[in-house]
Image (cartoon, rainbow, N blue to C red; front, top):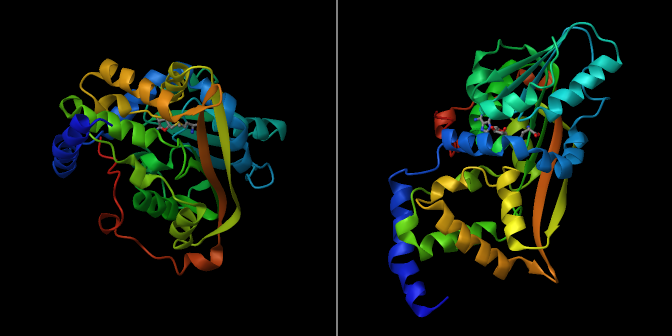
Length: 322
Ligand SMILES: C[S@@+](CC[C@H](N)C(=O)[O-])C[C@H]1O[C@@H](n2cnc3c(N)ncnc32)[C@H](O)[C@@H]1O
């Protein structure tokens, strides 16, 4: 960084970010929704790479495939989990079951609802608001794939405690710390070098789990025992930095980031330049997607000891405030 832009970053860029943080000028949930509305028709690209990893939480042996089962696909997107789970029920010829598939983005649900079934309800809603609408002890299995960071964790665990039946199954898979290496740095540099172009800041990183243990800890307070867990990483290679940036937007991997800048086109040019600088490996440009996953079972013996969280006092970075 040249001296002039270094001084601009220190004297103006970082103070602008601090100011926006203090004034709560952050990308909101409805702006993440806009990001996913935009990515809906290209989201298949994400599933093409990551869908096989979602399968790690969709084990036929753990899913309660039985008559009258109630399943929730929370933040269902274009319905990958919904379709998989439905296929298990169809295979076993189960007649009565319900899959409630909820998402904030209407466009994602439009894509999902191409797959139609009398057993599936597609619901446009915020995840926590939807969970609050469910009856206590009413859900046999709930899956949340690639979306836990959009929910206030305390509120989510609190609602899971309320809605899951005894022996209920909860499965999640999520990006974790270390995913999209250098992308945060690239965005931060782009922001501080052109502080006049900053509209908002983004604080989703605080909701990205550092490890599977952070989720296990939250769920175990409510009597959920770990059944299986793991971690993994996928690397995507591109011929040009432009293709890498397009991938990030089209897969929704950086949904919401367009709202950070007043002039998005100007910012994207800088981002592409920085991807060229930081993400070159040999002749290619590479990006990593690191993730964790876990499947939990509600243990009967521990329900009695469950602890009730005061959501307001807990780590509430995402307020689910739409
Ligand atoms: C990365 S996609 C995952 C979609 C799907 N679960 C899958 O495995 O393909 C994240 C999804 O979460 C949805 N989402 C984000 N915030 C949400 C919220 N507060 N409530 C419900 N859905 C939300 C987005 O609209 C998007 O469809």
